[in-house]
Each structure stands twice: as C-alpha cells, then as structure tokens.
Length: 194
Image (cartoon, rainbow, N blue to C red):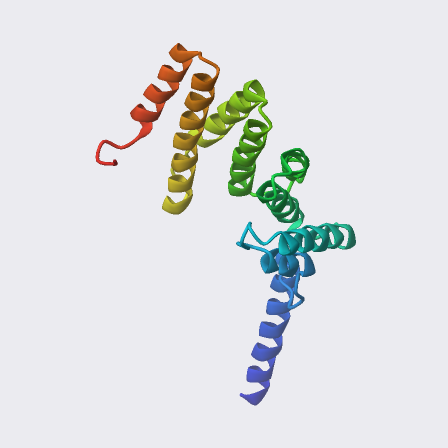
C-alpha cells in the first residue's frame, strides 16, 4: 500500500513537472512585466516619473527581448510617450506592437486605437481616419465563443472608432462622411444606451 502511494505521488510530481514545462509555467518572474506594471496608470502631469518609466521600459525591452510581454512593453512605452505629447515617438512604439506575433487580439485593438489617436493629434487626419477604419474592421469580427467582457470591449472600441472618424470628417468639412459615421455609430449602439 505504501509503495502504491509513493508511486502515485512520484507520477503526480512528474505529470505536474511535464505540464508546467509544456505550458511554459514557471515560478520565475518576468522582469519586463514587473517594470511595465510599475508605470501603469501614473499621473500624466508628473513628467519626471513618465520619463523614468519610458527609460526603464525601454531598457527592460533591450534586456529581455524574449519576454512574452514584449508587445505590452512597446504599448506601455508608447502610452507614456503619448501622455507626454510625444505623438510621433508614441506612434513608432505602437507600430512595434503590431510586429510581435504573440500580441493578444485585445492588445492589438487597443494599439490600433492609439495609432489613430497619435495620428489625430499629429494632425494627420487622413491617416487617422484610415487607422480608425481599420479599428472598426478589427472590432467587427465578434466570435460567438469569446467572453462577454472581450465582446463588450470590441463593441466599445467599434463605437469609438466611428465617433473618431465622424469628428475627423467634420474637422475636414466632409459632412456627408461624418453623417455616415454617426449613422454607423447609432446603428451599432444598443437602443437602451444613452
């Protein structure tokens, strides 16, 4: 009986080890993720901390280019630069996110929004309209298996994309296109929402 218990324990430990190695689960911390997390949600009015965050994240990206959070590192670096009004630099970081094959769909959608916002603030309206058009296309594909939270996120981003495009068309005095975008927004918005 005792021999059987030892065998079961040994097999269990072996299975846990194999599963952990196969799924990439380790007890090691991801240094890049820790640095990204440190600067998440900082006050945009505190410029020294934004600068420190950008430096730390860029150094961590250089030091840990194999991190599974590389795309998140580029995004956070871009976001901090965006908060500082460095839109061209932010745009470059956001574009790097799209080059990382492991980037999640949710991160790619958020990144596309920030690409559009960066272009908008750089007064590159035609490119911003195109970027928001791509955002709307990305969010149109709602998989029935997706979690409610992810579907809700995609829907909100799609609604925002149409509003941003409408605002840009209005700024360019292309009112018929602006009206079409607002109509798209209205058609997507649930009737009970205000």
